[in-house]
Image 1 (cartoon, each protein chain N blue to C red):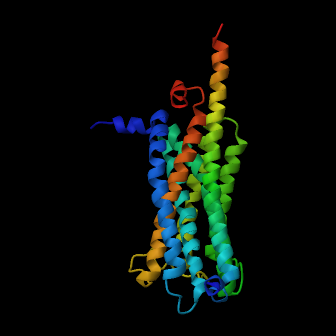
Image 2: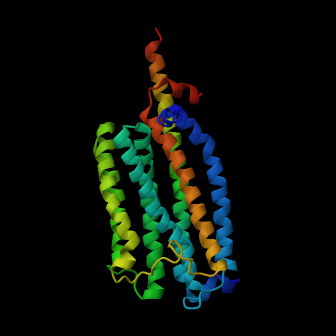
Image 3: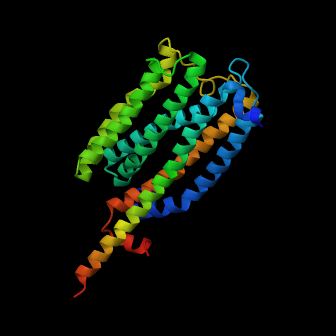
Length: 56
Length: 244
């Protein structure tokens, strides 16, 4: 197992490369979802303001 | 000929709903492919006869470099469609691409540096391929900066579309840099007009990664596109229905 993680001496280059890629993959999922949630939230807020304006 | 499909393609509510339905169909296969490729790339594939275990950086470097370039192609194409046919949804697609593309350009540069150090003896050289990829990052950042700097959405769409289209010239430069100039970077092993120069058990994880990353991008793009459409169409009555 430790042999696997040592990667024949390339561990200090290989694992950071995989880590950076993993971070980018996860970050883009989180950022995309957050953007969608924020857009929905903002749209709801606008609709609420619009409704208030229309009621007597 | 029936043109309904074309008009639907430009209809924000339609695209918003379709995007929501399609997202899991891209996301799940992408996740499974990437996990399977991780296992086969790190465990099953044999070490390289020259680079030993170090070649395995390939499995994150090549797919992220592919995404960086492919996303730019999608962004510029969508921008062109938006500019020519004045299709708002196309501009929304282009705007949704930039951030993801910039991320993966950075990943391709960083993983490339981490691969270059042990194999070439240096993290960075001002080599044609590396320089062209760095310019790609600046194109993405310039595109996002330009959009952020223009308040009027229509003007931001048009100006950034022109920038995206002009920047396309960098794509063949990235692709052929390793052939046109004496590059330290290796020539393509897979994406070429010949048989891939790799044994199958080395190649299979790479192909799975490439497909997995592509599907992953499709899923992320769809979510970003939904956000972008909502932001643009805030007062449209259809939003009231979909947000209920």
